[in-house]
Image (cartoon, rainbow, N blue to C red):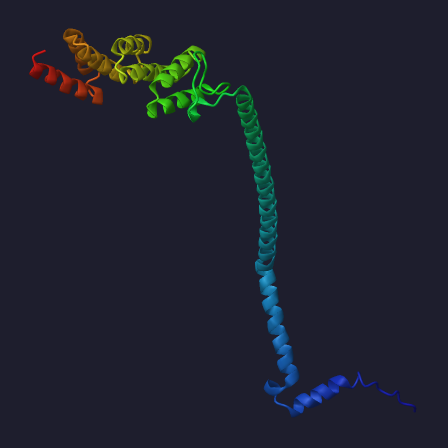
Length: 257
């Protein structure tokens, strides 16, 4: 009878078994390989079971999303910074152009700025077209430079142009001071009185009272001087003006006034 020829694959189990019969199972390379694959498979299954890979993947996605958001914010900030810089440059160029135009107009009229040594006409601000703060500062600069006459004119015009300015009380005081330092004591007394009466809550009131006492002292009006200096002590006791008033009162006592 004809017998079917067996394929090589059909003989593989027998060959393996024969090999196993001849080799110690613990040393069989096939068994060792299978054991290694089994351990690796178990390890992968444990990782999958614990969800670690899923967590890591989610964390990676979150980090990538956060990085994209940060990049977007950075680009936005850079754009805003560029826009701000452009606006500042435009404002500077506009202001510079306006100043140049004013300077050219003044030069055309043959007038130099009072802060550059020019004169100040009656009724003219030191910085025509400027803000109240600009003109106050300009007038104060004239006073610091001991240019008392144009300083007085500047402060007077300031008070006329900006009667409701928050700097009005200060301007009134320095107007009086510009008269006091040039020995125009009568004019100084009138202007110091305006500080005291019109701006009773001003921080300049103690100094105005003190200088009123000084001006009366220079005019040898002893009673009026004592009255003003005593008011400083009584109404503004914790001020430098009060200490100076006490010193002048002591001096008057020593002088017999």
